[in-house]
Amino acid sequence: MRTVMIVGASSGLGRALAEHYLRQGHRVALAARRTELLEELARAVPSAVPPVVERLDVCEPSEAVAALKRMADALGGHIDLYLHCSGIGRMTPEIRFEDELPMLSTNVTGWTACVDWAFRHFLRQGSGTLAAITSFAANRGLGPAPAYSASKAFQAHYLEALRQHAAVHGAKEVRIVDLRPGFVDTPLLAHPERLFWVLSVEKAVCHIVRAVEAGCPVCTLSRRWRWFAPMLRLAPRWLIVRVLRKAKTCAC
Image (cartoon, rainbow, N blue to C red; front, side, top):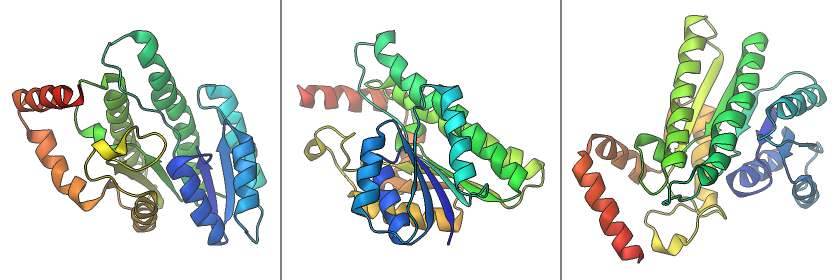
């Protein structure tokens, strides 16, 4: 039995991953802003070991860290896997700061507070896996979603830096996993019928669990997106602009 901490477990991939680990009989701690959804999840999924439920709002960094400490104590102090699934994303074509700020608060400031805490915990512990759901959008700045794509690039680079830090300090048993899904059919995704290569939640969970177990440093979900990633990074700027312009025309 492993001890698993999941932040952002109330909906989407976080909820689906929580269901998976609960059904597997692991000791699980669930955190999110909406604790009523976590309690509903705990009742809906039978588990030999009742989960720990804690309210956590990543936009309140100091309180979020205090909640993580309480969860760790409830798990007995030892954590095998920390999964950060909390995040928001939306199109902001008007480029207004007030529209960008919620994503920066959630995906950068709050995310960093939580991930830093988990990383330091694993360093003290001497082992553990820190896995975070970033995004395929980390590969390139995207005009329709500047703050979102930039925040995901921040996350990807930050995880790479933590991986380097662990290696430099000889923490060989501390693993950092960057999970980069493309489109996944969750409530976060508006109009999935208009998009391509949309992955079901069930398939995404299978990919994520395998990547976490393998300790894969960077895992792009799924294979199609994995093949597409290098092309997106290397594509000339004029081509990206042309594609986005065409997509905007089609959307209208």
